[in-house]
Length: 93
Image (cartoon, rainbow, N blue to C red; front, side):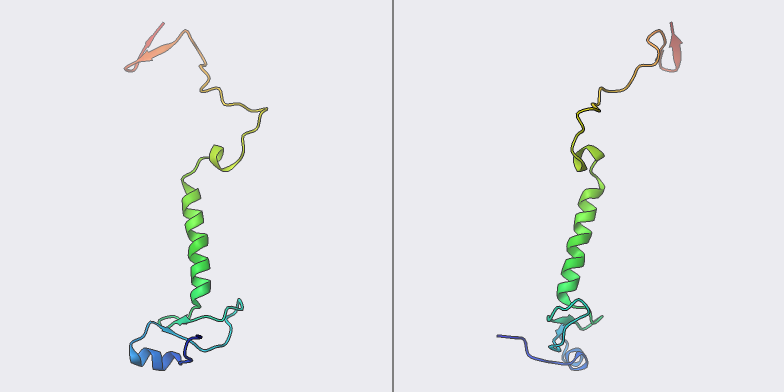
């Protein structure tokens, strides 16, 4: 069963969160819209999905996002001078 066609103003007066016009949005979805801002629910869910994907990828390192290259292998930090060792700010020889 399709949603009942109701205008944004009458939905606002009735205290509803959503209204349905039956006409497609800018992206072509025929879905309910929010009374507060008139946005399509399908467009909003797509935007939330993309935002969630960006947020989950934000904390990942480059090694997790891209496949490893066999010609470049991480071997740890390079020790520039084995003769110098610093302990609590004092350089030991």
